[in-house]
Length: 125
Image (cartoon, rainbow, N blue to C red; front, side):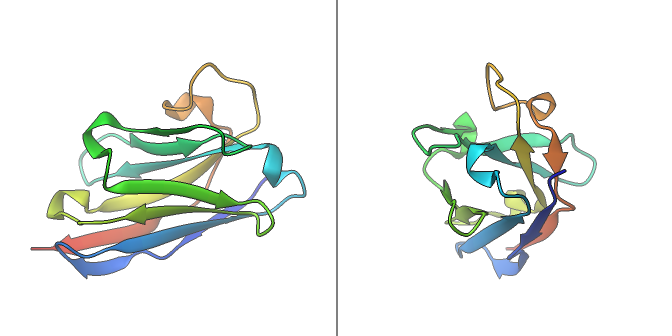
């Protein structure tokens, strides 16, 4: 079993930055691929970013390349999402997720096995 706990969300003005964190339980965190998704009110959950277990590869939603940066520190069992130049349309609940399987991609919610409870990001204009 893997438990994920997100933190770092909050209210920020447009143009600002946030760094979200996701702390994972379990001794095999370094073997999981990790991803970030978000869900805005009335919208479906959408992929934001993902990182392989060995940090060799990172993936980003095409619409968000350049403003989002995913990273991980396996010694701290933590994955991060840096968001720069925040926009009001970034307002959403942000979820981290862990994939313990070998999957063909890391951009779909179905590729992940464990989810955190989410952290709210609200961007004011």
